[in-house]
Image 1 (spheres, helix red, strand yellow):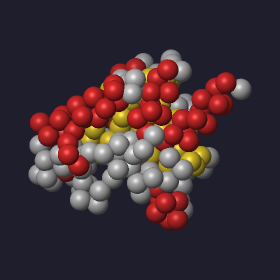
Image 2 (cartoon, helix red, strand yellow):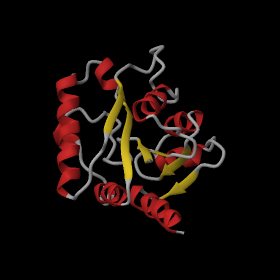
Image 3 (cartoon, helix red, strand yellow):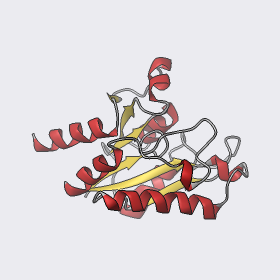
Image 4 (tube, one colour):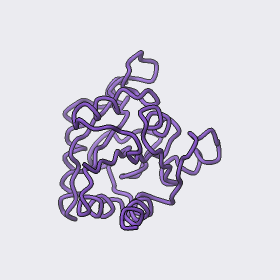
Length: 181
């Protein structure tokens, strides 16, 4: 099984310093939905792993998070794409959970759900915590420069072997080109 794990905000959709708090604020990054569709067409099962501390902070509730994800799923379907599952951490940053990235708990749950070894599985994110969580689970960390990506790159401290691309579309193209080689 070919699996790929994506962060949501800043990778698939435009991020906001004030959180994505409702479906109207969720706007796809140009080319990202089509990139997911291309990955699907080449046999990849796409899974989303996202920190959503806005729930724990009381900025939005589960119904709203579900509505945001329903919008994402609808927009993906409109271009022939889909996600197999969406994993999220609802806890605030000061929580002692194991699921909030940079901890790898969400990635371990993904591995269990799909009965998959995550060694070398592409894990695409725009922040160091996304990359650290993926690397801790054995994934291939991939930084995109959308969202917080430029700031993350400038700060350095990326996991060893992190690959870098301008956006999800370029990362997907590189993954598919490598598969074809």
